Image 1 (cartoon, rainbow over the protein chains, first blue to last red):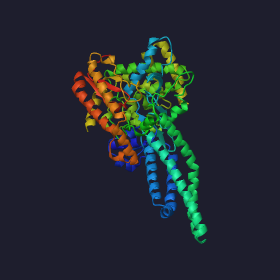
Image 2: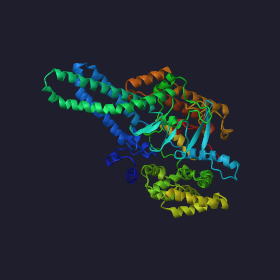
Image 3: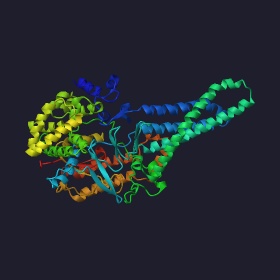
Image 4: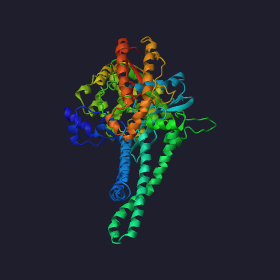
Length: 482
Length: 142
């Protein structure tokens, strides 16, 4: 039984899990296997990349092929005729370039883990306060928070996916579906986001690659020129043999010549960013440029160019906050308490319902409509129900060992330990289903859900409010499903 | 293993208990710091001074982990010279400090918080977003 259920969960995995992987895996499930973002993991969670990695392989191939040609065709001649230091330096550069590239691509860029259901509920409650003060107004709740950093006012936006107020400098990467700390940009060339944890490697990669490129280009030119001299002096016969050698050298020269400009440009740009302690994201948005008569400055700058560089290159490496290789613990906070939890659940739920109606009154808040509902543990179930989204499914399947009977039917048991539904009271089911209902685009049990919702609406919201909410909810569901 | 014990300890009550979240303090940049204000939800449960002491100690420990000192500078330069291959063998200063913080939180839990029916959760388990305090002996307040 256990084995069967285990397979069922793992086949829905977004990552390439083969049967042998499964058999090799321990009974316990690691965190990366249930990771909610759109990332790719290799080596049992040690390696983390973005979903699309095609261009990364292209980058790798370009570097390796060019360097290979250089070591194969130019180095022997240059080592013999000029100095053996040339291949040595080239080798060191190549190792450094590849090492920094792999570090950039394979490491966690500084993902901020998503909020726990309790934390999200707390956040919702906090956001509700301004509305509670003026109950007559249907004002959308504030989705930004202002903090003052060294005298500079910075707006923190609420992330609907991660259910957190994004820390300063963090941004949500739509490709990886993560909030990344000190987000620089998503770089398809390295196949990963560039953020707090790998910006240093990225910068060093760019810098060393530009040096490597110039180095190869210079060596190749030297080689060609020396050969030319040799040929004009020595016997013409030799030239025939040399054609293939020269061809490889010319290919290298062309690759280097065309790539070196963009790489040098990028290195220069990132040097400027590093010296002013900015991110690409901030630079593009012009976050710290003075505008509208407002005096803006960069509160993160250390003051001097040298200090900024030191911070970028030498400051202690922050740890990865997503414990990828840790084991999934059946977190009890995911399983909703039955006893006094019902009261609390209802409270936070009431908040949800209201948000939802606010959200759908304004078009701009559409996203909030979909996501606000998804703030508690239970509501991710529809994704699992629909079986439509790849990466989310497995995560949900494991998390959603909720004590809700209807959900359990659709989900295979993962582990006997936490499937056990502690017979929920009927009221609880209603509430849980309500949260489910809102964001469901493809819910199988839509009708049943609707029933539950209406029942619950009456219970939570006053009749006229309830009508409005139902209406708006209806519109929100259609929006989502389209 | 220590961590696991801590996890078990933290998770068993966390389903039933109310939680208090102490948010991050960004006033001094993006370094990890928590607000030292006393949350009103904990009123009567713990002496504000004790909690403040814990938060201040945590803040100073995180600050120590993040600031660029001579030691961390040497560490980073050495790692850079080895093309960051040294990180495979050595754990960084930050990681060591995090272990220290974990021990500190465990220690504080045992001596101060658990006897008062509270439980501090190591911020790293919450992605350094908040300092979560569980009220373990919740007598069904609301």
